[in-house]
Length: 116
Image (cartoon, rainbow, N blue to C red; front, side, top):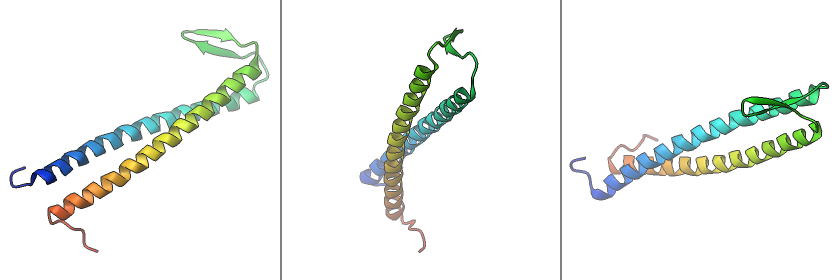
């Protein structure tokens, strides 16, 4: 980074850090989205089921005696996952805004202003 001011070097470093954070948050959000879809599918299948229900407990399958309690647990998990996903979305949007601002600042400092 020869010939680049310390301020611009700092902004480039911040830009790279924000980029990494954005990638990490996006990956975490995608993982939680998948987990939530799986919970919703599980709940749908449980609602259709009229027979004996089993749940995983480590490497074991255990018979469920109180299906309504299991449904309530799944509903609670879906709700909590939704809250977490919303929080990650807010964090992701904030990081995207910061990313854009830094990108524009760096481009302007380097004389690479986009044509309007």
